[in-house]
Length: 316
Image (cartoon, rainbow, N blue to C red):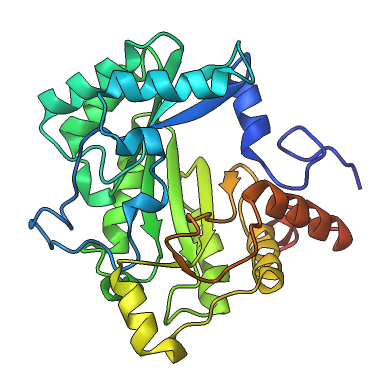
C-alpha cells in the first residue's frame, strides 16, 4: 500500500498538526480566552444548571479564571507559549460557555478586541448549535474575509434521546442545520463529541462516525466520557454507577480505531481524549495519559491493523 494517504503525509489519520501546517506558513497555537459569555442552559433561558456533564473549570486555564480583559488573557497566554517558540502565531480560542450567545454589537466588540492583539491570526469560537442565527453567521463570514475563523460546535451525540438525557436543550436536527448554514458561508466547522455517554452503545458510536462523515464538518474532537465534580452527571454516577461504563484506555483505543475507519478522511481529527484537572476528575483515572500519548497509541494500533482513517468507507 502507498504510505502517502489522502491528507498528504504518512500518518494514518488526518491530524491537526499537519492540517495547521497546510493552512498557515508557521507554527500556530490556540490560546484559550474567557470572553465573559454565558449559555442558555445556565442563564435561565433553557435551564440554570447547564448540561449534565459540564463544568467549565475543566478546560479554562488559570489565566482565564482570573477574569482579566480579553487582551490581558491573550497577552499572558501568548507570552507563555512564546517562551518555547518565539515566532509562533496564535488563534484566540473562545472556549468557555457559548461564545456566540450575545447581542451582535457585544460579539463584534469582543472578537475585535482579540483580533487587535499582535500575533493573533484568527478566532476559534466554541458554541452551541442553538446559539447561532443568520445574523451571527453573517458577522462571522464578514470577519472570515480578513482572518481565519472557525466555529466549534458542542454536538456530543447524534441521538436525540441522549441529548435530552444530558439536558442539552436542542435536537440533532438543530445541530445539522447549524453546521450546514455555517459551512454554506465558507466558515470552517469544528465539532465535539463525547464517546461513552450513558445509554449509548458501541453500535451507536460507530454509526455516529458515519453520520459525521455525511456533514460538512472540517475538524473533529473526540473525548472519552469523564465524570467531573460539581455536575449532574457526577450525582447520577454516585447514585446509579451501574448506568455507566467508563472505558479503560485499551477499550477506548479499540473504539477510536474502529471509529476512524468509518470517518471520512477529509475530516481533521484534533483530539481523542479529555484531560480534566486531577482535583476535579472523579473517573476514569488514566494515570496521567495525555492526548499526544494516546494519539501515538492510535497511530501504532492503526499500523498493527494495517488500517487508516476512512478505510471502511473506501472498501464499502
